[in-house]
Image (tube, rainbow, N blue to C red; front, side, top):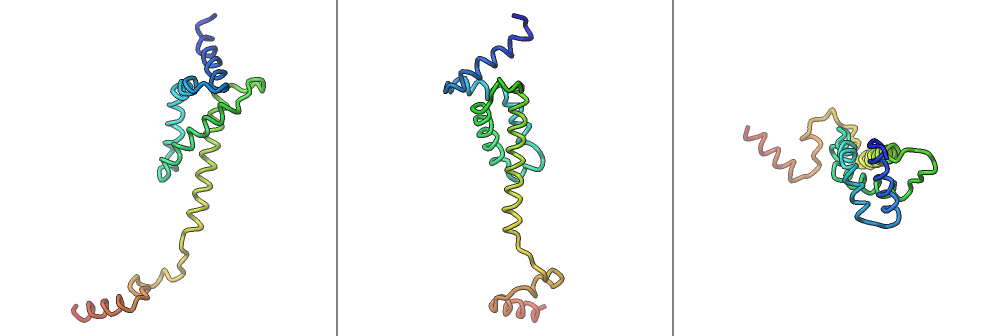
Length: 133
């Protein structure tokens, strides 16, 4: 067997073992693709959800190993990369939608901050502070 084919052959063996439930083979595959997982989760737009993105990338990797079908003719590395980046994009979009729903729209932005306070005790405290000044 040629030297350049050896890593590919080893990967196919690990993949087959991982697909049949061998957790050690799955961990070996994860180790091989750790740099890809790191690059995918360290994208700047994922900084606020880094931990969620890291967890999602591992889940995505395991699902991709399970779903991969060599008969389709797609290289495993390309399949994994597309799946992970796609799932992280979906996570980011889903998170953005949640943030948008949680964002408070306030049409009174032109008013001073203290004028927006509707707590009577806070208003009395502000009045006392203004008198002291």
